[in-house]
Length: 418
Length: 93
Image (cartoon, rainbow over all chains, first blue to last red):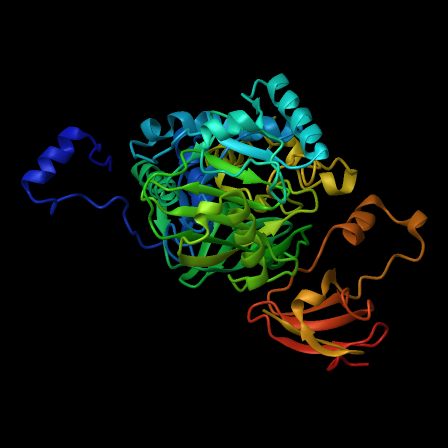
């Protein structure tokens, strides 16, 4: 069952056989008739959940059901930014847990997720922006999260390509900087978790769409799928972009709306940007991938949609903001543009929770910022599913908060590009 | 890009409009008698349909009036636009 470890020695050994004999990264088993835990959704969060269930909790047989293929959903569509500079304690602790896991993830998974701590810079363009940035930065430091405030001159020294002149339409007045933030290789995260989960006996079943959630006396007993019925003691749903659709199968209503979110990448350039730049006020964020492409993220469309594409006006406004910040990018050609569907909660915080149906768990509503949370999300969700109670890190992210009113209002308060 | 048919002004570019979320959510008549769960359902829970969605739009850069639209959330195709107070075309009443 245990896979060959990836190392310099396995690389050399396989080079001798012209790389023809690498073992598959994970098996493609037929679904068993029943499992102890079924994870619905084979994205990063779902695979991380399965991995931590197998690695840290004794829950028996685990399957991950994925309607498409591993790495083909939002895991492969995001802009790969990782940071933990959230304002409120609950969010800050959750994302910081995730960031701490990121820091050792390649070693833990024996898979290079190319986590690069090149820093994340959040720009301020108005006095109010700067007040919010100071407030958030101070809150971060009180929570033990690294954060610095940069002046325009310091920004210019770090990012020479940026226009920080006071003549700019939206002058840059300063920024917060989290040095431990950065980017990771998004597909590698899914592949790494898939391989590590598979090595611990998790069945990863691709091309298997869940079409119904079967219940008996208020408790879950299995799922209908495109490959037949599979029974399960517990069902953990982690489906970014389709949470409401899955909830509907169990006759639950969620405070979630699905919106298209777009991103685009340019042709590859020589190194020009070695950190991550985000601006909430002009709404754009940009980093440069290891291949040299500028990776640019846009905002969501206001309307709801499942169509995995958005409006051109959103891209237009986004690119205008980037060009305003980086005039030298004005003649860079864009190679690809795409959209993904994000499930947004009213308070822009996720739901990681038990549900009124016994044995059914939901991890959803990550909005536009789920990628950075991938390992932490899986870690707390595995705990929630295995123990049938939330970990203290995700207790505040209960579905119940919409009834009690204890929302975690990160939306505007964080000063981040949601 | 969408082209939206304002019931008063006719077809215009999406840029002129503001989105107002799910339509036909009726404010409970007697909020004092509601349980927290019912109130939460009214405030926060949404059908978030994958398929035909009844939703509100405002012609913000035009006549500034609100109206309702039936739109397919997969294809984004707009199927109908109708005035507030009217029932969606094709419904029983």
